[in-house]
Length: 121
Image (cartoon, rainbow, N blue to C red; front, side):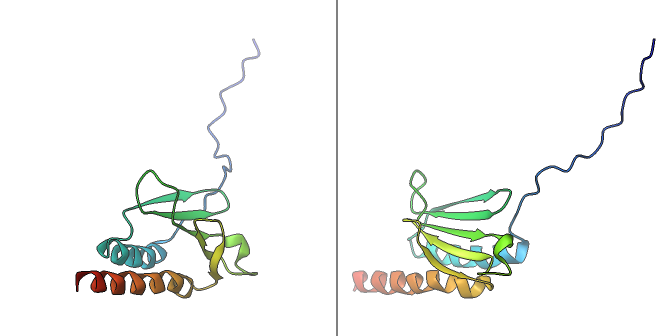
């Protein structure tokens, strides 16, 4: 007889996810598109997790990623929230500015374009 009225649905604080913002994705996809055009990369994946967002770059779909571009806002005040990590897990570059961090991949783009030019000659 002591029936309680139903409780309204409340918004519980779920686990917030870290994600890349549109300007960040534009910078990442710009270099990704150039590497695809050079024939070096073929696929990518995006993971939005609780503490980090990851943009993984693949040579083929069923491989381990060649590179991971990570955004960790928790490291913003320390080492920088952006990092490029190689296939072997080594941090290739870390910093506060995404464009500066991605320059490590642009060097590989120049090498890929140069070697492709020499092969055709």
